[in-house]
Image 1 (cartoon, helix red, strand yellow):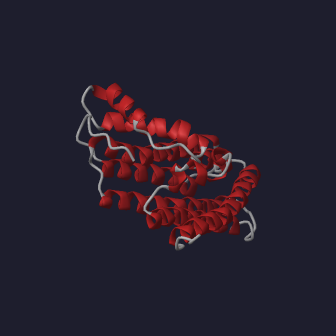
Image 2 (tube, helix red, strand yellow; image 1 turned 60 degrees about the horizontal axis):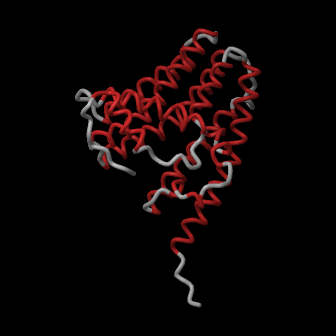
Image 3 (cartoon, helix red, strand yellow; image 1 turned 30 degrees about the vertical axis):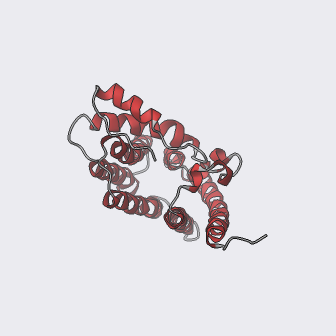
Length: 247
């Protein structure tokens, strides 16, 4: 990951520096790469002009996220609450991108900050689906079997996140940055796991049937992605541990 330590020259200069030092987009879902990274870059460029730190970005990300899921839990389903929830969730996602970019821009990153970011991310993966579960229980009359969908989705999402992060740490590298390790059309294959796309599904919250069909489909696709991730990461790590062959 390229380190950028200059924040002089204002917001535009900082934004351009980050654009030149951006991480590889190989295998990164479209919204995360094309939209969210740009939003995070803008937030980081503004934050760098003051005394804000990457941990502040992480905290802001979590607060916005909590506000978004709180609406699912406490507010009657409706168009206004769905839009408000979606916007808060997307804002939290943008701040999540900003913390790492601010660290690169100011040189303020640390192992503790990276750890905190991953801990918050892991909590978000589970809390979103728990909020869906509680909201469905409180405001709809769906069957108990339907309530298993967010439980299963939460399990799949959490395990896949952990598998990805742990594999990268064990390998001491970023496998997704290497073109030959990324499946063809990886950007689009990863779309069901894109947090930004899932946040947009919240707009269907007032229509329980439509929401459940789309949410359930994304859950099923994420289960397939989990299976593929487990196989691919295991093979990558097994290859790293294998002794060289003598010919």
